Amino acid sequence: MDYVSSGLLSITLVSLCISVHYEALRGLEKLSQKFKLHRWMVLITMYGLLLAHVIEIWIFGVGYMFAERWMNIGTVTAVSADWFDYIYYSAMVYTTVGFGDMVPQGGARMISSTEALAGLALITWSASFTFLQMQRLWRD
Image: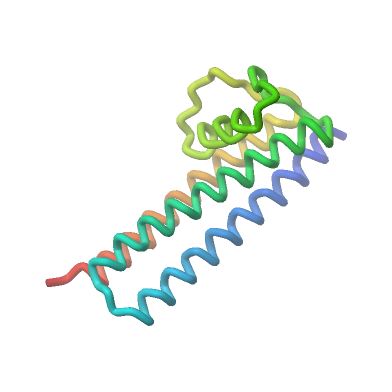
């Protein structure tokens, strides 16, 4: 039953992150069309996407805390009572750095694998969007 719950939580977290990312990209595109800032828009795009990724990392971090503390479907070893450990762990998984100082157990393994895949996809989506913005705006 833990894996069904962690699967549903994973789908929910990924859906939230995709929605945040889509809206960030949509907003940045609208902004670039409204204000013809050219090179400045590339810089604004980078800051906007960085903010979107940070929000997505926090979404998963809160998801790990929720899974462990309220749903009892998995743990992340070496997490203290500090909420920042969940955010740190989420950042390591999202960026696929994976230092290994924290290890998921139980249902948290499914959430972690899903986050790694989502992080890779969202970072790639950001890179593609940035490339297209630069190709369109970065002309002299």
